Length: 572
Image (cartoon, rainbow, N blue to C red):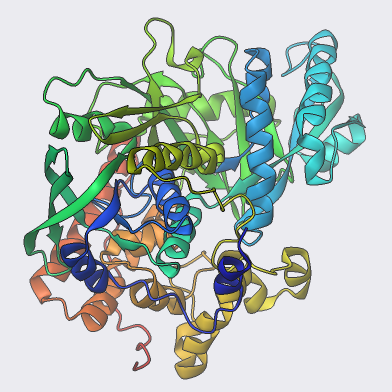
């Protein structure tokens, strides 16, 4: 990696200049080497790879960064232990290599996480015979690269298992297996990659949809419809020599803009997760349990992961043919997940305990036949008429997918440029010691776990207006200063941008998030000069979305937004 690139990221003295209007002006007036369509983890990773190779790069996202699959994953950076069972050894090796790279490049966003497999005499996740087979798989997992994280799997006693998860059903429990992978806040990870690309010169904008694409030998002209914070829109023409289609489950729609005869290749698979209070489970590790009713396919397993004072339970893996923009967790799906978990515990958890849900669509490549759970998670990069399309893949290997795609871009441009992202830290991650910061505790420790070295800029807002140190929503640790920071420096333009992807309030407790939607709207109005009718529309849309989620579960709707003035934002 170039020292200059690392220095640019490491020697940060102010928040990243991540300004949407500036980016749109640049897109309008700059002849690009490459235009990336899609602001999920794949698209932003392509933008970062390309700009670090010295290419002139633009990226447009029709909604918000990580608004689709990249904020609705299982939030794991992992090698994929179950892929060993499917004999996809190459995928596991590369995934574990990329897991380690991300762990080192973004230590503030990617943390080591223990996984627990309880072993029972019978009727458990693993019987002794199955456990022996699993342990052989864990030996292979460690050998393929799991060891890099500094922990190897081990067998633990019955008493140690119950220490890890005291609510586990004790009857017939023999012991367990413990191994390690990583977890992340997927939306913030995507945002960090986008902001790093912007810091290094990429022109990046959300709320900018490609509605037409004209191609010729000289390159491409994309008609981009940019929607402003006030709800108005304008069309701009963006010229680029190469276009990268990284639109995930929407990539077929983008391909059709360039080729009306395009054959669809994406087969969406729906994965849902439900959130419950952590005290209902009290597991210190990520607990694996058997799924009832085949919710993850044949012989499937579920998991429950702690996230602060909440934990989330996942996941399904089923074919999906509905609206790509609005997948929902149903009451039946939530019941299957929670009944499966409850069967493994000495306590019962029901749908009435759910504080939030999310549903996402995996953009799997349709290879014909079989359940979606049996389709490969391998990625595919193709070139057609100067458009590079990235399909399939998963969060962990996004950097590798981007490297392959950018190699294709360079080939089309007739240039050879070396990839420089393998050890390039993301914004906030350079020289950040996660363990040391966590040991300090307190507010700065919590902020550092989300912003890394940029936590000091959030603290600057609090120093200017101490009321911003107040929590945003009841029962959640996120501060009003984070909402202000999201609007000013992270291109948040809507209530949902702030409460769902900049801070995961909506992800953890949807009713608590709905209760402060009006206050977030007031902040957006003050910071972006939004008209009152646009603020009212955004707040109503956010609360209505939470209401639909609750209705799908058969639960009471949110009571409505809280009527309070909240802390005033500091003047710029």
